[in-house]
Image 1: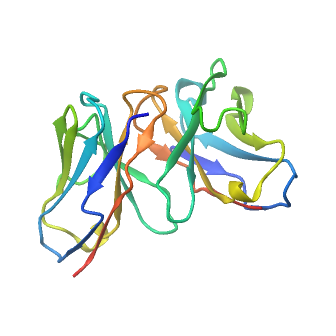
Image 2 (image 1 turned 60 degrees about the vertical axis):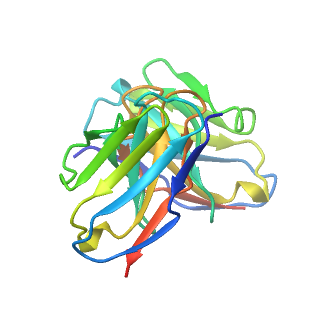
Length: 117
Length: 107
């Protein structure tokens, strides 16, 4: 079964760092991009950026560039989203999702990770 | 950024109804438009990609149409499991953007 499994919920204080993960299984991880999407209460979904695990080529949404870091480690079939210093406004649900290319539909989604600051 | 609007924002329907949701882009996105279904507490689920291609294992009662700036998602013969929120998303250019969503509830 193709799936993305995300790390568990995080409760942090403002200024603390955090790194959440997304682990793929059931497919060749390096053959698909991984996107990160934010959901905040009452707001539309927001694409934060995408990474190609084969070479770590990254596309950032300018609204999030400099605020977060996206990375991947194809040897363990995982992608990551990290913050160096959290703000209260970073609270939300973060999804990873698989995509055949950098700009395409996202066909497999993780279960979401809730970050509370 | 390409802005997406959806209408209606909310829709009440009955089982067996035909439902149409529209999505309009602020500029032409050719057919780079995708539709997702989302239920509370769950991740989004891809229904339609490239405006009209049905994602694998999605029931054929879901149909996407349109090109350029105007798109539609039609659900023929609503089933109980179809009551959810629906989002369009453009993959024409960065940053990828989503519509505000349409919630379909039971009349």
